[in-house]
Image (cartoon, rainbow, N blue to C red):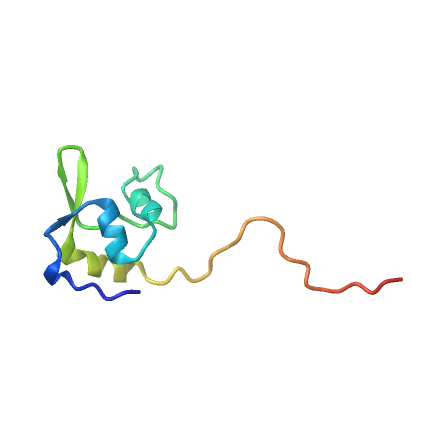
Length: 91
């Protein structure tokens, strides 16, 4: 995880700006703002934010604490067949 220095950031950030500053994918930031029933189970909750019109704006001074609360992704399952690691002897 990156260390975020919020002293030179504007107070409110867009989702794209916050994702770049935090060092996480933009898609993960967008998924955090989905409704709870539609949000994937691995995305916990959105960062501290407010709305200007219809668009959410993330508080820059609280972004670092939110990123650290996410923790490590750890055990990520991959889709598809696992690679065949055994070498079969030719008959």
